[in-house]
Image: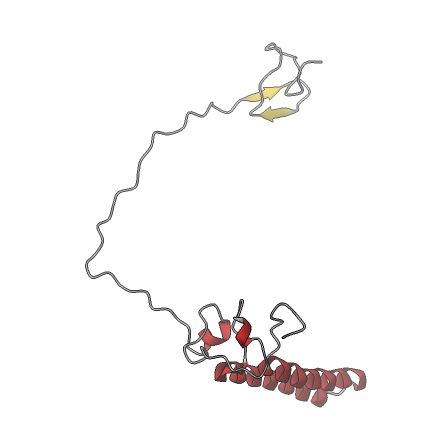
Length: 156
């Protein structure tokens, strides 16, 4: 029985990628501290290598598909049985050409139905109200209904 009641996603691909990326990032850190462009480049190359190794391990079944897995597949020692087909919501699998669901095409063209037309909504015309101070309010109604009345502030 596992100590945790949920799948934490620990996989061989994940741990290997993190270990290699940690080395690459450390080399880049040394490059920053010593102002060494070759160390920066080497650290970047190691980080790209970490990405490629993680991707290859994922595609070979040592990764985890996104989402919830059955309890029998929680262990790091268990390979993913669905890696060959690809995971439908996995970016890595889609980049490798896996996991794409081909949508079935209809045998005959579907009839096109015209859109439902409705009557236009009744919208009152835009109004321009002014209180004589040069401030104009669009779409406001005059409170009180006479010139010089408060604009949109309600009755005082």
